[in-house]
Amino acid sequence: MTTPRAFATHGVFNQPPPLEDYNLYASDRALMETVEREGGEGARASLTAFGAKIGTAEVIDLGRQANTYLPVLKSFDRFGHRVDKVEFHPSYHQLMSLSVAQGLHGSPWDYLKDGGKPKPGAVVARLAGTYMMTQIESGHGCPITMTNAAVPALMFQPDLAKEWVPRILSRNYDQRFVPAKEKTGVTFGMGMTEKQGGTDVRANTTVAEPVGKGGPGGEYRITGHKWFFSAPMCDAFLVLAQAPGGISCFLMPRFTPDGAENAIAIQRLKDKVGNKSNASSEVEFQAASAWLIGEEGRGVRNIIEMATYTRLDCAVASAGMMRAAVAQAVHHCSYRTVFQKKLIDQPLMANVLADLALETEAATALSFRVARSFDRAGEDEAEAAFRRIMTPVAKYWVCKRAPNLAYEAMECLGGNGYVEEGIAGRIYREMPVNAIWEGSGNVMCLDVLRALAREPQALDVVLAEFEAARGANVAYDGALDALKDAFTDFGSLEARSRQVVEQMAKIAAGSILLRHTPSAVSDAYCATRLGRDWGDIYGTLPVGTDQRAIVERAMPTR
Image 1: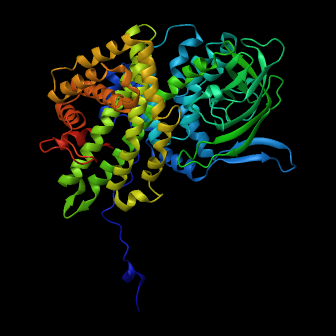
Image 2 (image 1 turned 180 degrees about the vertical axis):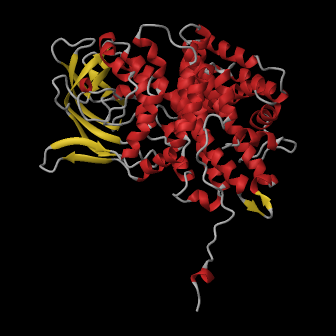
Image 3 (image 1 turned 45 degrees about the vertical axis):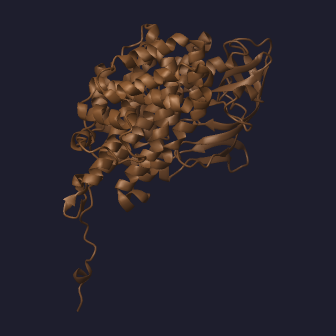
């Protein structure tokens, strides 16, 4: 008689263990060095503890759950009353709680509690946590990012800031759908984009009518629509609308001061390519109550202050997802055997992994150098100028590089990377969003040109930093000379601005790597990204590159 043992044909072997129960901070050499270098050394203990907490199998699985059991719009209750609520899986709320407890939603602004001064390295420290958390789950980071970025915009209206900023700075995540004054903590969203387009916000058609005389801090009634209204279960939103004095910025709470639900009607949730756990909605305002931030007609200036911070988050989050993709690829190849050798020891695969790791370390270095400029801009005009120019540069380049890297890392996992049981597919789908949101690639390039036109001296600040690395690498020196030549014909820059901004990003990254990383990393980067000793896809590093040294820096040790 045949026994079941005779049919035991499905033994599991040559499969890597899951990448879990590891410290996302302590296992990431490049991140640790970057944070220390850019001023976040005071947060070492906090970041190490956070990296261990979110690297557990339990927390990693929360990311899977939040993207499996998606948000659901509940427009009406069972009796037919309009409710306009979005229900989330418990995993989403758990992720939000972890991020808020770590202060990812606003820790750099903690000094506002007692009227002190900004804490050195606070922006870098917060973004290091963001960099790690986005590797676990990216969608919930949308309201986290917007909440942090709302603070500087609110500061344009001190009475509103006095009421709302203390609520933001709470480390308690309160998911209840009740008025903000009854909650232990709040989150913020934003609404700019309308059906006719999102880039030219001055063409918005949503109308704001003053209640009484209106003016700064005054109440208005807003009627209109928003084509993308992210995180509609937030407690308040920064919204653009046409006031009598022009396009203006408003604070629109989910509940009015008397405790009634505000007239925000959620029409539907967007079925997005990625970013699935985050509820992005389409809404209508039906004379919704809102309060003016600053002067009428200054809405673009006020909301841009918010967008500046969210753009930096886009760059850092993209770099974090790049790290997640590379970590998965290196981990897989460290265990998988093909032709009697580990994949990581196969010369061609080693070239691919090293190339991916190189791109990720450069993206990380560039993003966090810009983060340092946010920390220091208030007391150093050169850093403020660097921030104005290099924020859109970093956002443009890092977000553009991310999707193709995610695809190549997915291919390293073979078929295992192309099934939904793994994380690679989710990372790949998530990658394009940061390039699209908060200003697409063309908008970023034009922002660089506008900033340089307003402040020609800012270019001198940026180039001076690049000059600090001159002499360390021939390819770098040649690329820097070519970049300086490109700015001699400013009139033709718009048509070729993508090329120029790309060169600015690569030279900026190269300058950091040359001054602060091992020569195996910096020489390979400059030879390939600046000297063009490279193919058109990953895995074409030149002969002689110390691939092992580069990959070892990217190894997610457990």
